[in-house]
Image 1 (cartoon, rainbow, N blue to C red):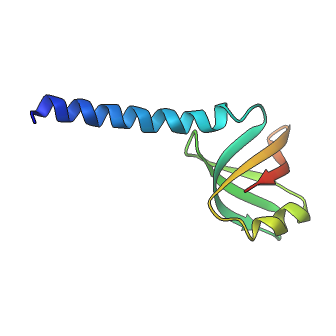
Image 2 (tube, rainbow, N blue to C red):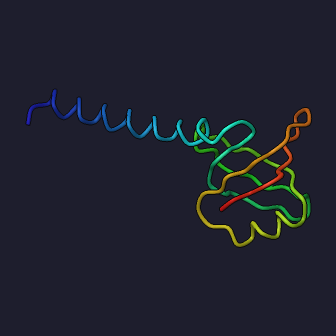
Length: 95
């Protein structure tokens, strides 16, 4: 194989990987984020995910029922939330 073919293949693979990550949150709908669970802080009633689209951490406030349920979560989670100023309040989490 020549170098041009290898570089073209690598560029195509990167483009496909990037586009599938963008699709994850945009396709999920308004007030919805998808990502991997990073931390759960029961004392502060918060949890943080690494957003699949932006790759940035996003922290949500949640009720005790959601916080307790997240202790069993593994892998990706989908968070439905409400915005109140700078605070994102989780109203539903699927994993």
